[in-house]
Image (cartoon, rainbow over all chains, first blue to last red; front, side):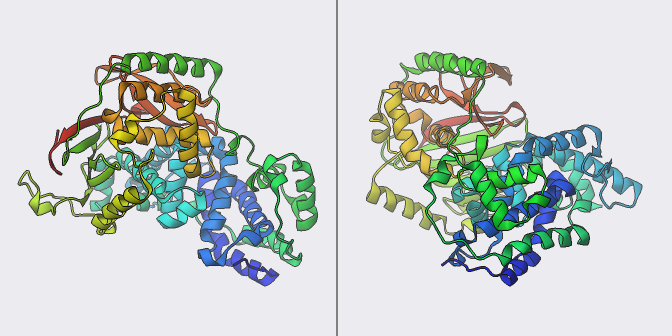
Length: 183
Length: 348
């Protein structure tokens, strides 16, 4: 069943999903590029609205699929930023040391080290594994939604996610993260 | 440590970028909701879109329809075009990846050498009731990675899967952990998501009975009867693996699924079929090689597939035997081990 999407429908779709999509994109390519990507995602979604099938469920995988496709255009910049962060501890997307919202000095040190490890692992992942992992962890999509978003078989999602999670876990060494968890 | 710990770690990554500014949200909302004032175009068949010729025309039409493209950056407009079906540019499934001439030539030479080395190898015999034990090990991982499967060779159906990475793991299928043949209770709980795994095994067996073997659910006899002309085999691979390629190229799907085929069935292949698989892979323009790597004192030949500007898959071959020995890249290498065993849980 296709949707005849009115302006109100489209605005509601935007209000519901844009904040999450913004965050997902901004964490990968920074807020400026994310703004372009999110705008283009919704414009593309509007252009393709006759292809949206309500019988398939929510719009989330549809939108994230378009956004992920658009983000591939910025893959080199994305990976370059991960590598720079991993190497220097300075996040080029924010211009600051990657210590997040940590307040205490030891927490900031931990957060910076952890961000560097995560960035290094993300940079080393094959593109598909990175897409699947970030859709799962940051986009909070379920396996089936990721399969739909990327148009790949469910088994490929599970395989890619398993590999990506294991690599990330390997990068976040047990001692570093366990220390933080038990603090 | 929570099983969700990678998820938590990623959610805490770049937290300052997680929330967009209200101004940015409003700015984009104003832009995109203008699109909603335009009547929906009639659903239409657009076979011409697939071939991508009238990119400029479509861009113009979109600009007229949406009426807001003029405020977008050139990069965003380019991305918009790329997001439409059939306009993927170098990322399109219609445009498979291509390795550099030098790297592709190296892969062709390496695969031919491996084909010659493997040509005389014999398949292992798996008697009725026996299973193929498959283990992938990543000793350089921290913590070390181990993935084990006990596979029914009729249909390449895993009867039990066990993964251990030092901090967590799971087991699906097979006997209950307390009935482990080694007598040692497993410290790893079964993954709740795979609680119905026995039913899944039966479903796969039913599919094999109903549809017969293919490259994703082969039998030893099916593997032995595969084409021994590389182009014929490649055609078969494209036909069977292509539909699962998603929005990646068919070539990518062929390489990806062939890696799976080798992982699940490698010892069952005749030397002739193994050699034909290598020669078929050498026909893919996206296949390349960066020579040899040394891992734990042994040399391996790297063969990878490139697409979208990155190496997507990398398999390692043993130059001494011509057999596939594992997968890269080096930092996350996993060595493969295959053996014939009598029961689920036996380790060969």
